[in-house]
Length: 412
Image 1: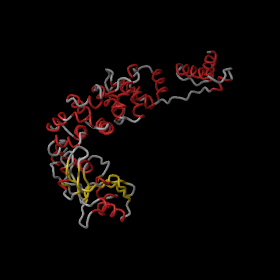
Image 2: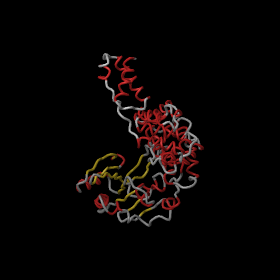
Image 3: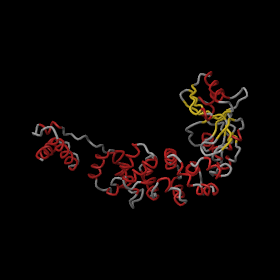
Image 4: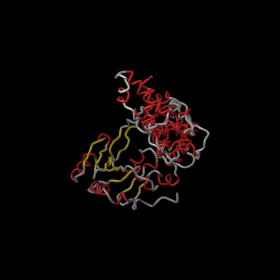
């Protein structure tokens, strides 16, 4: 990186659209509002900004009063913690009153509303996440975040062990942010504190672990970061099994080779699924959605039997699985083979759905009823036998071939 910009004056979202209107409403009459956290960090790094959070000295009731008068919609999504979601022209912004810790005991720390921007920054997790920016683009840094951002260094604010004890999810966040924004070796104090506090991972809800892990898996430097977690004894407690780091790394290369965007569930399969039983374990361990579990179970079902070179078998597999499950299982098989990411045969197999669409089985129940098969189990058996023969024959569609298949199935 050639250097950080001096401020955010050139950030389009700060100059136009709904955000400046919101800041104008919250600023003034003794109150101040700033953009905080990830939006500031990403804008300084010239990376995409997905969500924009706002902090303010105004109390929640005053925030609601001001935005309502301005014609914006206020939703008290976390008002007990000082957070109001304000919707301006259809875009949501989380607006949170400045806070300071009164007592700290994990996620349930007792906080009080305040007006001190430094105290609010010092209660956050990492220095690069504690930056704030005013409406004119001026960036405020109370904890050394700009220097760490310049060096791409993820560092806890204050004592790392203390920050982690406030919320053990910060162990995973340390690695996730290092994978996304860090360069080089991770912060030594932070790493040692994460290792020392690793037992705290067992206290976290499975949903929160799932959220952080899936974000980590698609980060730019996920491969070396997962290797570091494994070496530090922090990966097995998360996935409750042995990680296939080589398969994970190879899958990321295969994704790139076929032009696919990184997908967290697919990458989770490469990391931790060798059999359907592994998919069951991860489903329970991470409280995955049913659809996510089904994808993992499909990836783990017989990937070792897949090899390129047999176009007929590939088409049969694609017909049986459908495009998404087919591609994921092929990519997993490719990742665990000895082939390189440049292998042409594997690439052609993985991209087969782009060139071939499986036809619809053309024979119907009526075709067998007219051949003397009565409705009931025999009819179902004949249809299944005919479909299997049709697939084995490589999906013929001409009438003579279909008639021959139907006749054979009807005879049993």
